[in-house]
Length: 450
Image 1 (cartoon, helix red, strand yellow):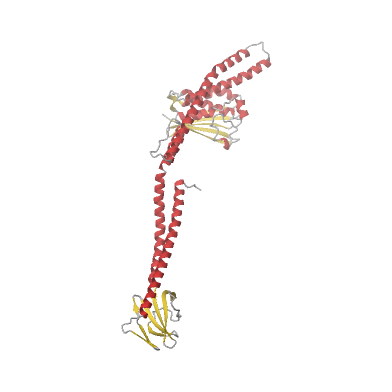
Image 2: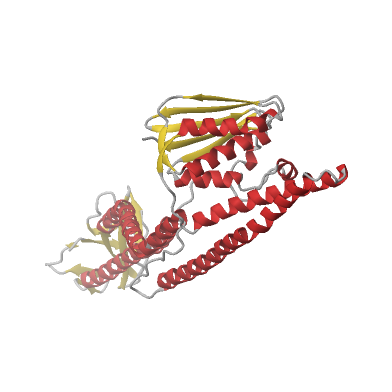
């Protein structure tokens, strides 16, 4: 499942919180409005019944009403009952439950036929234990209608409001975190470009992002210094080792020509010579890499890639014959590119040497060169021991060896494939590896054709 971005997470969090808070407030407001509406109706009906009762005159065991008495006033209907609950005056509203009992001085909500009513009963005594009841009746349908309409509106408006709040919030958060996106892009450009001399642009406001950018710049400065010291150290060591290693090689070769030495002595000297040559190869490759990292310019010229590959294969035939490995070349014509001849020769030398070292006895190496879409496409394919999938991404690292003992036995330095990838990148090419353990390996590369 795809992870949400920080902007989306923050938007969801604050939108959810606002939705809960706003929803709670709206519910409380509706309840408050409903309560206020009911309370206002109760006060209104009590006052109306009290006012209506002032029109009643009592005399001994009877009572009479003023001539201008009205049984309806501003939505409130009045009824007069005797002590037995029999209606004497007034009219009961339609759908109002007639069997509703009388209850003195208590406003009540009555439901009848899907309609609600507010009633208020007031009792008056007169004469010899006589009672008369005055009831006020008013419909609360308008309040119910308002509440229902409000609820329906909220069901429509509330989600739209939350979506609008979320959209505005996301825009604001995105705008606020724009500097973070710029920092990520600049860091990625510095990382991909491998130019640690570049620095992040600092925002105008000296806030947390300003401090973060400063910390990144300080880190890049320390990294640049460390890498520069490492490159200088590699270059210096490579330079200093070349002369003593060359002396060791020449002296070993001279001693091997001495016929007075015993076979045992010559064998030991041969071991020293082998390791000295391996060290010479290592220092040569390290020096080449150091020069590249220091920005040394390379001579780019028109090269015949097919011809250079033939020269490399011819030179490595002897080494391949030691394991009875057959090297074949299949190439098209017109394989011209711009490149540094020394580096291209070194690249092909490393790839084919690698195929020989890890190839099987009586095996085969196929070098295929062709043109596809204005590109030179090459493949060095063997039927050797192959590479386990877990190692495929790491074989390009410096000094990384899958089988260290076998690498030392073959005279490998651990820099061959790292140098290959560097040479390919230098020539604006690409390279990748395909391998099945126990079946073989293919290195496939592409270069721009001219």
